[in-house]
Length: 491
Image (cartoon, rainbow, N blue to C red; front, side, top):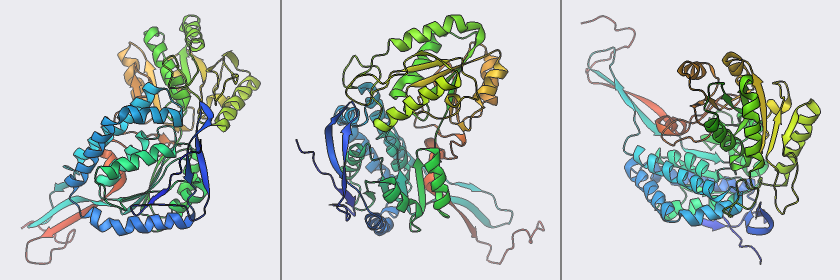
């Protein structure tokens, strides 16, 4: 059957790309199933979208923030009613197993609800002035037109983490989703408009990152960029965005420390979930397991047995534990790192093969005898490939944890409160979990990393900072010219 053709959304109208070019989104578990044909936006299309966002800005930013929040709340209510349909669609387009897809949709719902409430707050602050009869305060202002560029691995949650705060702060948006999951983005934008979002407030452009994404980054009429993706593309954004407000959520090479006093059954569950959930395709995935050498003989066989028991398959099947990778290129990349690991001297405990299955599948892979200088211990693979590194102490474990260029998520399993607090204090990461895995961020808390992971913080009240500017206001009611720092005499 010929797939349905979807269009760009610019200024509240569905339009074809001026280039006349298009691409197809497929099911990674069954690449022969085409889910839709989408437009390849040109630079000119992006410029039209920016103009539409500019035209809608005054009306939207002038809408009281509580009313902007009410639209987000209505969108959340629509998503809640359509959660199962959206979840199944996501599994077909992205590949993650259905329970995880439901979690992705729920996360989008949670963020829309949370940011709807921020429409009643958008806190600034008041403070004292150093001069008499003078009032001082800070208020929040929108940035203007925001460019949002999102990845495919959380095709509704991550766009919601950006769209909801951007909109409640009064910005208008040009939104470019990943080309592997455009249908999820199409659905999300449609829900926002169904909830009452005015025309032109969110403009959807699909297409190539090197064309549509690059124009969003470089165009001087865009006031802010929020990007989630790879470190290399993040560098491109930083070099080309100019003097825009820029927020970057980049890669991770996250680790789980398992100490010799840990509850090993609990740790095993956390390791398997963190390492192989979403087929390892999370920026917070645990690709390094840092284990105390005293428990090697007990924990390693437990982990091998658990990994070998994972079942590959279509994410819509109830018996599936691990779905496909997103595309053929991801399979090839994961397999390349298997070859690299073997060449570097790591021992392959299980997996490491491309199974003879329809779709973009890769066997859950586990290496041991890995040292921190190996590429599989340093580079983000973004697939179901995990390295075990053995250590002799907490100090060594933390040194290994901090030995990578990234600093997003981390975890430690221990029953010693001293170990837990030392880890919290010394691990270089934006997130640290105690006796839990490296994944599971909640929308009312900040999310982001340090080092090469980037400096953005999304979620929670500080997430508002990413999508707004602070304006300082002074009100002098003395009736005379007062000079701060000069009129210092106390009267």
